[in-house]
Length: 375
Ligand SMILES: [Zn+2]
Image 1 (cartoon, protein in one colour):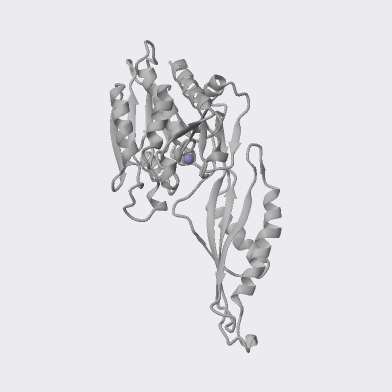
Image 2: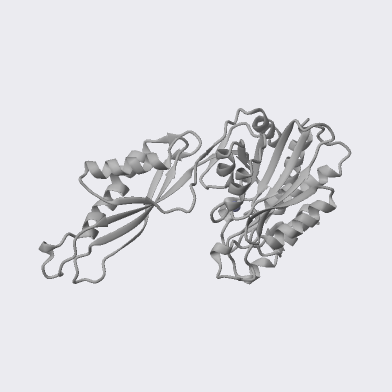
C-alpha cells in the first residue's frame, strides 16, 4: 500500500459528514476527527500546523511548508474535509479491482490524501522550493454553505494560486457556473370554491409564470454561451400553494435554480426576471433562497502559475465543469483558483462512491511535480 492510499483508507474510516445533513449530535457529524488526524500526520512530517476556528467545534486545518529563503510566492492546496451523508457501511473502506470504495473516496478525501501526501513527501525531499511557501488548507463545510473557504478569505489569507481539490479526473479546471436559488411568490384573493369569480387565483398566476420561465426565458438563456461552460440554465424545482379544493388559493410559491455564467450577477438575474414578468403583466415577489452567494468561477488560464500547472499535467486547453465548489469563493476573495483532483465527479455523492487507486497515486505525483518545479 502506498502512503497516499494508506492515508485515504484512514480518512474514509473517519466519518466527517456535514452536520447540515444529519440530526443534531449524530456520531458521524463534523470534520473534527479528520482535522485532528491530519494535524498529527502533517506535524509528523515537519509541517507547521494550526487550526482556524470557523464554527463551534469546526475548524479549518492549516499546514505550512515554509521555504528556506524569503517567501516570494504562496501556493494553496485546498480540498474540503466534509462529505455528504451515507449509511454506516460506507465508512469501512473496501479495495476491489484497483478501486477504493467508501464515502468521500473521490469527493474529496482522495484529493486530501493526494495533496497532503505530496506536501509531506516534499517536506522530506532533498530539494524543495527555496522561495515558495506551500500551504495545505483542509476546509470545512464545502458541501453546505462553504463556511471554511469563506472564513479563510475573511482572515485575509492570500496566495498566488489556489488548487481546490475536487474530482476532475486530474484535469486543471479554470471555470464553473454559479448558482442562484430564487423564491417567487404570487398573491391573489381567497374566495369560496363555489364562487371563484369573487377571488383571484394565485396558483393560476404562478402557472403562467412557471410556463414563461420554462419556455421563453429558458430559450433566451440558451442563447447565452460560454466557451468552457455552455449555456446559462433555469429550473423550477419546487411548487406549493393552496389549502383545499374548495378555496380559491391566495398564495403560491416556487423555488428556482438559475445557473449563472461568468459575468452574470444575482442582482442582474433578479432584475431580468422581474422585467420579464412585468412585460407579460405578471406579478410575483422575488427573493433569494440561498444561505450564501454562489458565484461563477473564471480564472485566467494564461496566468503563469496556471500555465505551469497545465504543463505539468500535460494539458493544452483549459476546461470548465458544471459543479460549484470552494474555488469560486477563494477566487472572489482575490486568490486565483483552479480545481484539480483525482476521481470522477460522476461517482461523487453516490451510494457506490469510489476512486481509482492508480489515479489517486498519479494525482499525488502531479501535485508533487508542480511543487518541485517552483522556485
Ligand atoms: Zn466536493
